[in-house]
Amino acid sequence: MRTASRSIVLSAALGLASAAFAQLPPAPPAPQAGVSADPGAPPVPPAELAAAAAPTLTGRLQRWLVNPNGQVDGFLLADGTQVNVPPHVSADLLRAARPGDTVQVQGWRAPNAPVLRAVRLTAGGRTVEDTPPAVGSAPPAPPEPAALTAMSVSGRVARVLYTPRGDANGVLLDNGSIVRFPPHVGVALAAALQPGRPLFARGWGSRSPQGSALEATALGASADNARELFAGPGVEPMPGSRGLRPPRGPAMAPGAPDLPPAGLPAAPPQS
Image (tube, rainbow, N blue to C red):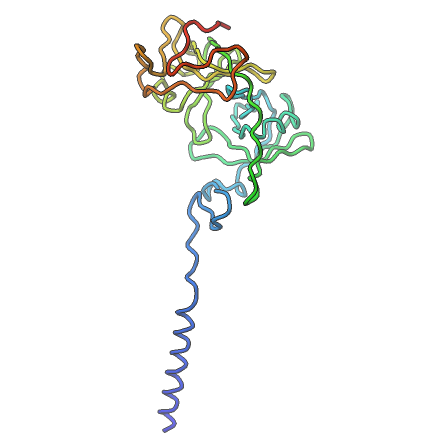
């Protein structure tokens, strides 16, 4: 009798425990690279690239890198390290540091990428951070871009510039000019963009106290053999350019002609 009672009590207890366990919420999935567990949180880099474990570099700021809109989007350290920053912190960076300053940079580096993506820079006691906006708040207004003008530059390639993913998207010439282009063009023309090679570029860009940069619409070893990167009526695009349309800047210089549907106006001013 007692044995039967104990069996009944034990069975009831096991049944209650099973029911309670069945009502527990499932365990949250393991976080994946680039995905935050909080759906409202901004994306994060893969775990191995997380800022908490990011490398911290200290060096002398050698020169700013600018984009065709005149915004600082990176800099070079004296040891040759390329550092990438988002253009929306350009104004803060210019207030915090200048070439020649010793800076401390924290960021993350993609595997095999020869560039550091900065998330924090400290110079002279001032710190600039790439802080994502709070959930639900509006992102900061982008900096006002410079007016784009037709430009052409020539020189020898001093070094190749890269995106944070490690894709070649520009070159720095020996005269200090910066030429930008889409990453697939960097792949197609890799052999012609090596340091020491002559390069002529035509496109649209701007000049500022921090430097000059253009988005190339034609490239070549010289002006005589420059090939168009973008397809247009009667224009044969450079191999690998995919016949893309030329870039359109958010602002054009007063009186400057707007870009045509494709191609570049003939004979932009030489620089």
